[in-house]
Each structure stands twice: as structure tokens, then as C-alpha cells.
Length: 316
Image (tube, rainbow, N blue to C red; front, top):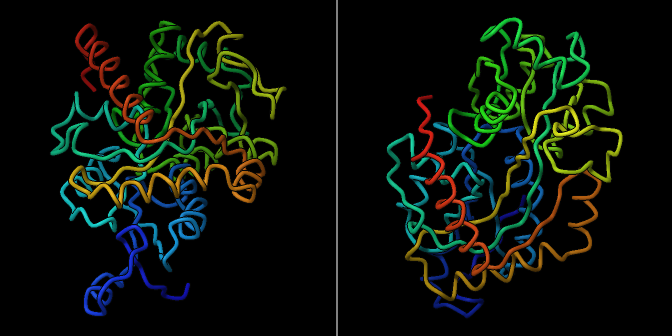
């Protein structure tokens, strides 16, 4: 990718010396390893954000895996508020890390500039396993408590919480195998090293259709129109719906002009016909929220998961 100039102050011209100082790429940080659903979403959005930010902006995606995304969030929260350090944040992972870890960030450590996607999770297994449904998987865990291994990104993040919700709803116990990202978890499933995993529809449905893994349930209230043959977990007696929403956040002290520029670029990306066509092709569900709506979404997440933590604390 050729280097382009970056003009951060709302597209205003800058003196030559200042422009040279700003002539560095914008970095979108992903708190998980390459190849997972969050990483793929970041790389899909990056060229459209470059276009809509304007000013010759160049974006690179930087993977900072560890602690279910917490290490990346710590770093971005403490970064210079210059518009060049942007986190692709995932929910509920951003808020759940506050309750069972010791992050250096809080929810108000960030300026939330726009939600872009929101997807339901799927439960999937290897094609060589005997499990043809979520019922099969649950019954195996009932017969052999803590002997059925399920892999997924991090500890205490959204996929792990989804599995714990399944355990509570079904009265069974699996064994969680944490990985650095959804891509690594998928490799473990496909290689026969674990029975299954939990990840979003954009990462798993195409692989299911290609026959490289088997989706046994979609964790949504109703069947998904793009894959109507996939049953929900609720249909199979497991009353759980869960998923992952993703958006962008900058350090809280970022100037308003830069925040507004990012908010507008995300809005334009969400409405870009080319981006939406690619998202449709790759089973990525676009759900845009502006800055104010996303901020309320974060506050609601923090309140809901905080209440859940206080009434039923997990010791992961």
C-alpha cells in the first residue's frame, strides 16, 4: 500500500513542518490475533475508512492480542489523543473485562465514535465429531461433565460468556479452552483438537456451507434469513441469545474535530454501497450507531453486565 499524507484536523491545511510530523499511518488496533472475526472486520472496513476520512489517510491494522482484548484497550486508552490510535472495540468484551480483571481503562477512557457491526454467535463443531445439533453437544456434556472442550477467544470475553450462558441454561459443564483469537479457535476445531467453538456468523457460516466445520446452532431469537436452515439454540431447548457488536473508539481526550471526522467516516462507511455489498457477501451484519447512540449502548452494557456480576459473580 502506498504511503499517503494524513491531515488530522478536520481536513484543514497544516504548516509543512506539522504536516511532516503527522505523516504517519493511522493505526486501528485489534485485541486479538489475525484471522478471527474482529480482525477480518477491521481489515474489511479499513480501506473504506481511508476513503471517507480523506486527506490521503493511510490505515494499518495492528494486532495486539492478550487478555481477551484488555491489553489492546489499555494501550489505546493511554495513547496520544491525536487521531492516529483507534481501537476496534467489541461488546460485551470491553465491559466484561472490567469485572474480572484489573484493566487500566474505564468505560469513560474512550470517545466512542461509531458502531459498525452487530452479529449473533454460532455454536460450531468439527465435521469429524458425532455432534449434529446443539442438543447432541449438550447431552455429551451432560454424560461427561467437563470433558467436552470448547475453544474461543480469551477468558471472560463474549464467547466465553456465551458458553457459560449455555451451561447455565442447560445445566451442564464444558471445559473452556482460551485462544488468542477466533481464527485460532477455528483451527483447533478443524484440526480435531477440540470439539467445538463459539464465534460470529461472518466467520462460521461460509465455512459451514463449504463443509469445513458444522454449525449446530445460531444464538439468535429467530432463524437468520441468510441461512434459514440453521436452527437457533432456543429451538433446541437452550434459551440463550448472544452475539458481538463492534465499533471504534479513540482516547477520551481526542479533540472534537478529530472525533467528528471519525464519526462521519464511520457513518459514510456503513452507508457505502460497496462496503455493504462486501459485508453481504461475507455474511457481515452492518448495524450503525452514531457517537451518542454508541455511548449510550456502552453505558447500558456496563450497567447490565455489572448488575449480572454482582448477583452471580463468576470465578473464571
